[in-house]
Length: 106
Image 1 (cartoon, rainbow, N blue to C red):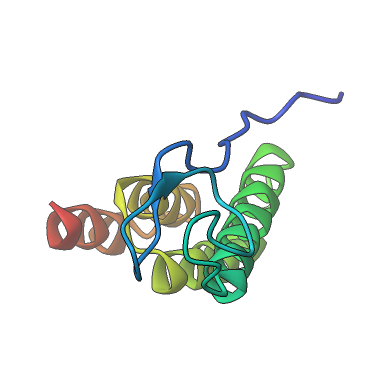
Image 2 (image 1 turned 180 degrees about the vertical axis):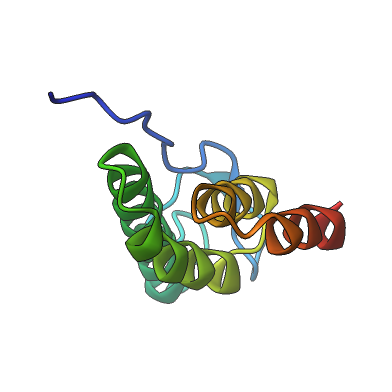
């Protein structure tokens, strides 16, 4: 059974770290032409890991989802990645680690 995964879109209100211009995520700043390709690559990697983790969790492959969720949380530690990591630990039966993950990120 195929289930459509929720999509997280690219940041709509991204600020260039050099000049502060607000723009959508792009490889080059529209104002100062700063190279933002590394920022864009990190965002793409984050989305790939997030979707892979959700796919594995949806396929009842919690053991395989844990390393993916750990990579995601290491790359971009935020509330979303912490929840995915905690859910992966819960589905593996590692309740203390799931709780620790949520407490550490609160």
